[in-house]
Length: 217
Image (cartoon, rainbow, N blue to C red; front, side, top):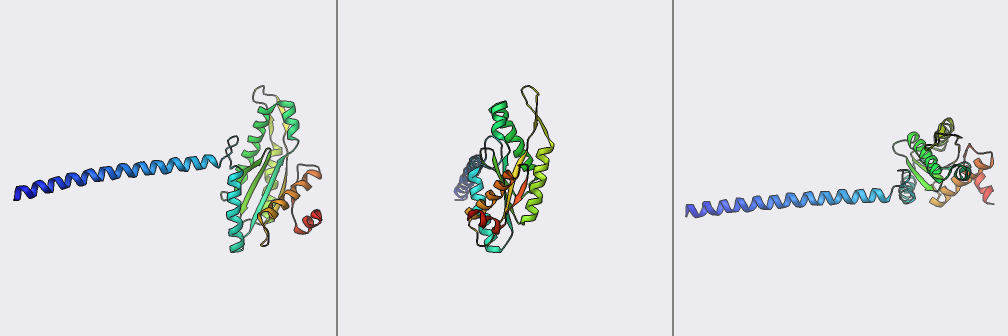
């Protein structure tokens, strides 16, 4: 009987050990799958040219933080940015150089943004920075620092080392209001950007609801 019990106990230990090994293997496979899914999700939310967030990620982040700002009565600002005379660079130097300029501006935006901000490629040569917990004046100051940083650099064409001169950007800033929809906030930032361009470019304009109301009218 003792021998039988010992044999059964040994067999049970072996079976338990096998189950533990299988469980560890399954856990590792699940963790690997989770990591792969997260990588795929990150890639789906990233702009391939610049490495910053794409429009899909922008929309997701904007929805989340507009809801948070409205619910908790927190500040939220949006900056829209456009590269001045970008078509001229493309026509003069070619699309590869145009891509180089887009990457350069994206890196300037990323370098000056805070950790909790989202820098995104909004479309073409246009970018956006969503700034949670940031009032309009602070966002304006940050946007002007970005503008000055871009203007201060002279770009060289990678293939020939030719001086391409100075790149400038125009920016528009809008602060979220409790009665804003996401579309309202984007429209007001876009109106401010439009004013910067029509004031001579290489400028930052900040939205006020009164100004935008007159523009819409």
